[in-house]
Length: 302
Image (cartoon, rainbow, N blue to C red; front, side, top):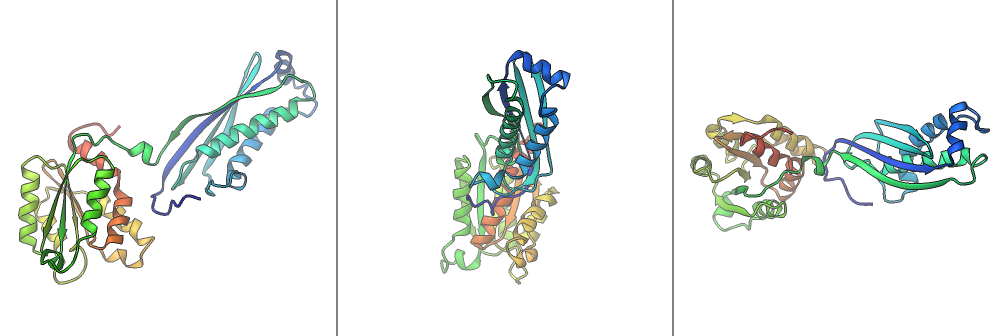
């Protein structure tokens, strides 16, 4: 199975359709309630719901998902029955396979119940109609977006330690399509950080600034104070998401004091200094912060 432990949960929905081709007289028998095995539609609906909940037991690489809602609807046409299954869950991975399985099993159930009266049955297309949620629903274009990464560390600034966390942020941003990423290393000096944040924000050429380091409880950890001094508005939800995501993976994540805020049209986000903390933090906020940039630019939430 694919490792989805780094993903964040979100509302996921999917709709899928299967088509059962039947002889025209069969539709009449269904409408008249004359199918020998009973009314096939409610039985197929229950079968679809059960199938959605059991998908991971029959498709090996599907993750077990707590289904919040599953349903199935039918449309009787002159020579076919269209089955539409809908599945919803709040989870780390999507529910398209659950919807496809539900639609398929509903069609198979109809086939089983109708075969005594129709020897021309055939299952046609099974296709995904829609899926929403997760990365595909929050991904925003990053064309032209410019970012800066600022590493706060006395030892790294002095050449005693190699930076890994800041480089990781640069790599992740570029992997997302951000082509221009500045890279700075500073000592744990709040005045120097505030001055740099002002320059990066006020020149209008930087959309996102991500800092790493200086967010803990140590005497030299002053990144949040320096950031708060220069921001016009805080965005508490970003820091809350980082801490919540990290706390599920490391009990000491709650000690991080990182903040996020906006100066002018620039979003500034603090991340911890450790490589693991940076990885977890980016997992929590990417690609969501790209949406924040669109909103700061005055574009629609949609």
